[in-house]
Image 1 (cartoon, rainbow, N blue to C red):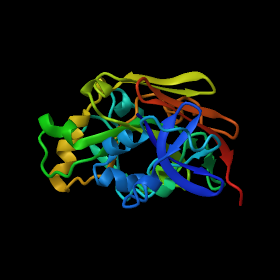
Image 2: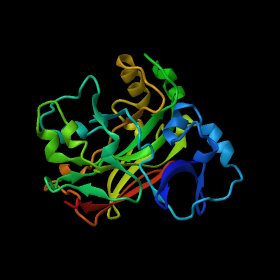
Image 3: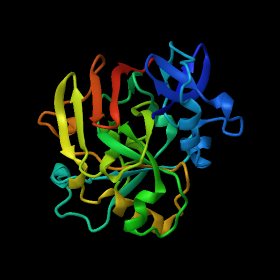
Length: 284
């Protein structure tokens, strides 16, 4: 079962993805007005039960960012072999993971355009898997980490490259341009560790494979991410961790291969799906 936030005829809904459209579920759960509320209530299983045998309610729709009101999104930087070498100012692998925040306003939904701003044409792609916390925890042991994850989704962690270099030890401003990245298309409940362990992530630009790696090669695996982050902050249902991107981002080619209007970027992980976005210039 897959769950998405979507819009149809000027209204926003959430529900289950079905053949031929969407099954709206928000009306069945007035106490959970958004998909994030359902996640925070531990309600994904109940959503699945409610969707069983139901007919499609919306055949015409557009995907929204899957959790548009998420308040805490943390990203892991430089987390695959070879990524260190892409940063010329890094001479050794870090002992601890690099973290930075993103805000929901910096993401759009599946099949919607990534926006290139007029201030910089260095819009880049970063294909990643994102995990959604479903159970609160502090100082979570690695062995227990997956028990705190309720769902997985995909992310194109779009980046304005030259803005990540505006200040020392700070990439936040290059990572938070409005609608520069995407998150979705949907949430897939985590029911088996094999959905993450060894999963292959592929990023394509205009059909050309640019990134291709497996999650078991992460420098800091997902269970370590959960352990480390929960050491300094209580992880709460609805928190999103964006787990890191493989080598092959456009900015690391010589010359760089940044995104331009008309480009199509796809992030794919078997068992989760494909997140697809075009690129357009911001209207100002």
